[in-house]
Image (cartoon, rainbow, N blue to C red):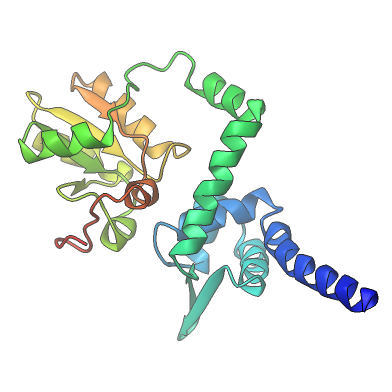
Amino acid sequence: MENDNRRYKDATYEQFARIGKALSSPKRVELLDLLSQGERTVEVLAKEAGLTVANASQHLHVLHAARLVETEKEGLFVTYRIADETVSEFLLTLMGLAETRLAELEQITRLFLEGREGLEGIDRETLIERVNKGEVTVLDVRPVEEYSAGHIPGAISVPLKELEAHLSELSGDQEIVAYCRGPYCVLAIQAVEFLRARGLRALRLEDGIIEWRTHGFPVAYGEEGVD
């Protein structure tokens, strides 16, 4: 009986450890974060994560083996997506735990933001109130595919690489709030710096769409529609 108990314990904890092993690579954590924004092909994921397609495929295979992501093949292309929303919630919990327990993370972030101006935050409730009153313009500076997969209601899709081309459409009389994939994404930081350098009033929302959804705020999909 004691041996049966031990085998049961060893077998169950081995399964728990599969998740930890799958996330033991920083690149796999990044890939999972990217997939939390929306489904992607291997080629797109490799480019976003700074990997070769072969390396990205290897990392994604590990995540798939741990049942954290799912795949769909269309012709020559394989598309990946997170298995379900609990995976994104787990990723947020992991990041929150790291923020609480690892002083190095705070130091890395502080050094990166040191000397950067105009990165004041705005809270979610205030943002929604000001959007409803028409007092701010909210820019989603992620790739358009991520915007379509889920965005803050009322936000305008202006990917960072297209921001300069749309500059003339932004009013200098209205404050702009930019957001991207969350507190560790640099796209919104770059957008705010770009806008402020051109005399526009801009702020960064640290939340990404995953944080926004997890806190119970409405999410819009496609070009319109709210969940």
